[in-house]
Amino acid sequence: MGDNDIEEQGSFRDQNDEEDDNRGNPKRRGRRVEKYHKHVSKWMLPEELRETYLERANCCPPPIFIILVSLAELGVFIYYAVWKPQKQWVTLGTGIWESPLTYKPDHREEAWRFLSYMFVHAGVEHILGNLIMQLFLGIPLELVHKGFEVGMVYMAGVLAGSLASSIFDPYSALVGASGGVYALMGGYFMNAVVNFREMMPLLGAFRILVIVLIVGTDVGFAIYRRFITHEVGMKVSFVAHIAGGVAGMTIGYVFFTNYSKALLKDPRFWLCIVGYIAFFFFAIIFNIFLSPAPA
Image 1 (tube, one colour):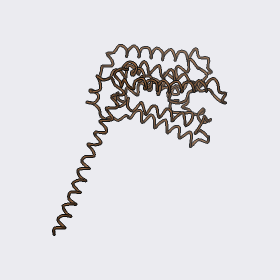
Image 2: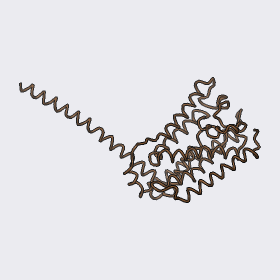
Image 3: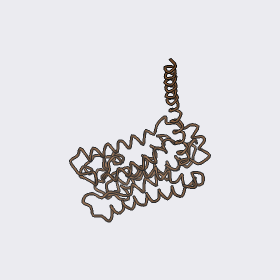
């Protein structure tokens, strides 16, 4: 009897321990999520706004925009790499140029191409680079600023990239989401520069240096492919990188520095919007009446 009682008590304690562990798991998960939000606030916001963010912080809605865009870009890449009869995993293939998504100067009357080129990538290193950067930077940005703001900045960079390319490099085609990625980087870069002392000052210089190195290397490689290599086929423009970065450093900067503020009351917002709209209409007029590229 005594042994049985001890065994029953022991098993009862084990069950209680398991129940306590099960009850403790949500708390531990909650602490991990809270710790992650603290890191995000340090990287994305100046010190005076962190408490406000942490009071509101949650994953509802989750960073759905940047995840859906990344999945769509990956899906299109797999389609052209696997189901199309070409060796497209490493470099450009004919399927890319024949795609209805690619921006081509002689098909610019098909207006969707000014945006849809973001889904088509030139090779595995191209899409991996864009996906890693936009997920690494876009998810924290979307946790702080939510999907509408991040989506507006991203798409503004994509559209600015194709419009600028049609003006300054009118004979070149466009593939890839670099315009959107550079817009996110440009907005974050300006926010980090302006709030250098408040946003983790010990790592501020390192963070800015990393962005400069990534941008310099990527743009340098794009310029090399555009002007130095003699690849067969259409040339791919590098202008979208620069234009996307400029869009990010203007529109993105305004969006990302107005956390918990009335955006419509900020004169910088209207200045950027008016400038972007003026550029948009100028690009349309240029492409209709002035472009040297074949129609």
